[in-house]
Structures are given as C-alpha cells and as structure tokens.
Image (cartoon, rainbow, N blue to C red; front, side):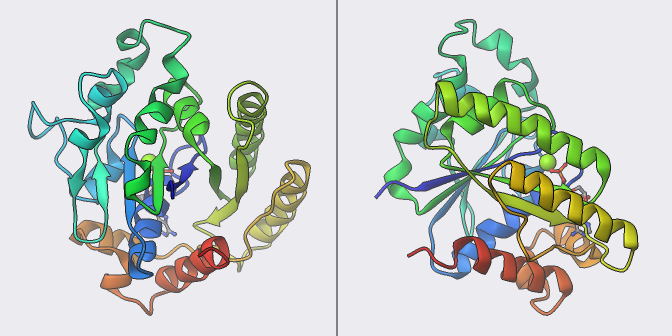
Amino acid sequence: MAAKVYAIANQKGGVGKSTTCQVLAAGLHDRGKKVLLIDLDPQSNLSTLCMAVTDAQKRDVVTILEVLTEENTLSEGIQHKDKYDIVPASMFLASIDGRLPDQISRPYKLAEAIKTISKQYDYIIVDTPPALGTLTVNAIIAADYVLIPAQADILSLQGVSQLYSTMQAARKHANKGLKIAGIILTRYNGRTNLSKDIATLFDSAAGTMKTKVFESRIRENTALKEAQSKGVDIFSYDKNCNAAKDYKALIDEIFGGEK
Ligand SMILES: Nc1ncnc2c1ncn2[C@@H]1O[C@H](COP(=O)(O)OP(=O)(O)O)[C@@H](O)[C@H]1O
Ligand SMILES: [Mg+2]
C-alpha cells in the first residue's frame, strides 16, 4: 500500500510546523509505523532537529533540491535515523523557481518523486517553508492530507484563510482528493481569555473550510526546546511533560482510527 502523505503547512513562521513534523514522526514510529520526513524549507530547521546532514555541512550531500531538479532520485536523498528516515533541505531551495525553468511541470516535482518510494513507508510527512510559493504548492499537490498548525492569534488565523484559497485551487486543478485533516492549535496558553476567544474564531474558520480544530491543543512548554537542543524527540526526553502528553493525544486523534 502507498504511504499516506501529510503536508504540514501554514505560511506564518514560528507556529510549530517543523516541531510538529518531528514529533509526529517519532510518535508514529513508537506506534510501529515506518515514516519518512521531507524537509522543503530552505531554513532546514527540520533537518537540524533530526540531525540530518545538510549541504551546509557537506557540500555534495543529496538534498530535496537535487531531487526536485531530477539530478538525483528521492531514494538517493534518504538518510536513516533511529526512529525515521529524512530527506534534508538545502539552503539553495530558496532559488527553486530559477532551478525549475519549466513552469508547467514545476508544481508536480515532489508528487512525482514521492510516487517512486511511497510503497516503502506508512507515512510521509512534508515540512514546508513560511511562504505560499513553489515549495508549499509542491507539498500541497503531493499530499493526501494537509495539517495546519496555528498559534491562537489573529495573524495566524489570517494565514490559514490564505492557505485555504491555495488548497481550493489545488483541489480544482491538480489534486482533487486533497483533504484538510484539521487545524492544530499550538503553543497554546489556555489560561488567557484571549486564547479562548481566538480558539472560537478558529472553530468558525474551520467550519467554513469544512474541517475541524483538533480537540488536543499543544500547550506552550519549554521541554520541547530542551529536547530539541539535546537532539532527542519529546517522548524520549520526558514522556510525562505537557508537550509529550498533548502531542500523544493529538496523534491518537489524527491517526487513532487508521490501521
Ligand atoms: N508547544 C511549544 N512550546 C514551546 N515552544 C515551542 C512549541 N512549539 C514550537 N516551539 C518553539 O517555537 C519555535 C518555532 O517552532 P517551529 O516548529 O520551528 O515553527 P515553524 O516551523 O512553524 O516556523 C521553535 O524555537 C520551537 O522550539
Ligand atoms: Mg519550520
């Protein structure tokens, strides 16, 4: 069976996209699933979190850039880690439009590459940059599902509605089966009335998008940063901290029903 492909997207930065990718991969591994992470962000944060080798450290390493430009296959870009595999990003991904001169095929490169290895994994999780350009569009066209991490603030809400327009266009022209799995409220502080008010606004935005806000919210928790600085996933770092509990509940909610 082909892997289920999840794109983690929101063109706002700092909302927990890369963190969520890495934690979902670790959590799915702990449930016995085989996971591939793909880093599509020139900032390479996910590659760093997973301690992958990037072209900043080793010039001739195969990254997702060489895969998109078809100089290498996706298989050649895969690095094996303890809990999951990862294809790292390149700092040169920012120049992707210049590297892919054919505008017609440009948005389909990732989808085509994923087809070649998709039977080897249960899940493929794609991290995206904080922009709605070629890279995020490639992720949305390659995806079965989009997951939208968002902080409970008004600018984050604006980002979600812009992303929705892009997903609607993808559905119409390129990826009819695309589903919005839901919105994940991240870095949440439920003690403030503001967070609660905004959560209500997100619920209504989700209704418009015919999706939902996941009940499991990810609280702001410094343990995540500590785990990241030590290079371990949150479940190995401290399975009883708030972030580990919240992400575990989220994984049950997203993937619970799946075999
Ligand atoms: N729930 C959380 N609690 C505390 N810090 C978090 C949480 N989620 C993410 N962070 C931190 O916030 C910053 C941005 O997160 P990141 O995952 O890189 O977001 P994005 O990929 O959307 O830019 C990082 O320093 C990360 O460690
Ligand atoms: Mg990121």
